[in-house]
Image 1 (cartoon, helix red, strand yellow):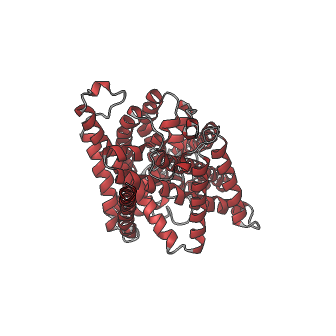
Image 2: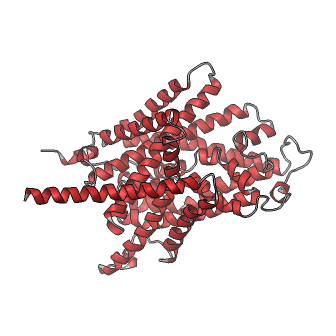
Length: 464
């Protein structure tokens, strides 16, 4: 007979871990590398506007997730909520989408980490570094949830310090306190409006929304960690309430600095806008310093990604949607089988990026880019239905330890804005394929779930 604790996770994460994981999950290559693309496509003011809209959407989704995660603090939370408050087929699909998002990201992050090391050690093969980082990240997750949380805390701290330094140094350069190449006077904010507010037209704001949402993905990790967080009633709301403030400071602050110091035509063409700004200021070893920060960001994202995908598989098994052995945990509370499966998924994604980059990998990346936004839609809809059921069962709003304000306006706004960012990519020919791959994939997920259910029922009927 199996021991019950073999399927139990342990509440080992503290408030500081949760705060840094929710922050570290967001600050990644989306800010350090893709932000240049957004400025180039949407223009300086357009990029600031796109990130401001993105920050609001994420915050509204977090307010919805807060109510659910405090009322039901469960690991792999959103698929459990989607299962209960939308339907089991949606719950299964949400879990698969979220697992795929992080698993595909793992493949690209290990490649990116190897490429950064290759710039320092040009005569060494990239795959050696990728393999080394795979071992490091796997070990971080395999030892214990406490060890993972501690590793992520320090990874995130490096990123946060780098961004704060970037904003302070950039602000001094904007005001003319620090000299910057190409300017004999304080640049101030002329680059923001010099060639019109939207040099590529207002359409650029909408077409970059998916890139912006992808940059903000990871905030919802607060929900994944709910089942392993100490005192979730106190710590989850605390992490959520400060989310918008941190996103505004780090993302919009960085974008304003970049847009003010780099002409929009030069942004996002060849290198990270962070490196470009530091080099223009004449900071010694700017490229190496920023490469180290980007490497930390990549490893942090891989660390969080492996954790999130492992917990999704554990949760699917715990809810009996996939074989029960994926829910087994070792004595340290780590679901090793789910961890190995997620790691294998990351390695397969990495292989497909080399072997079938223009076919299999392209499809995977397209689906995973949209997946997070669909997960956000599911969170908002789950909260709407949860509140209805809560009131119908005789409870009052006052009983909720954390409540989404302005219900139902906030969850519906979160749902509609997330959906719009999916639909609007139809207007961007380079991203349009994502939608065409996603729709059949969603249909396939529902077909697998209900097909499996029908076969199970048929088998039970045959037995009886």
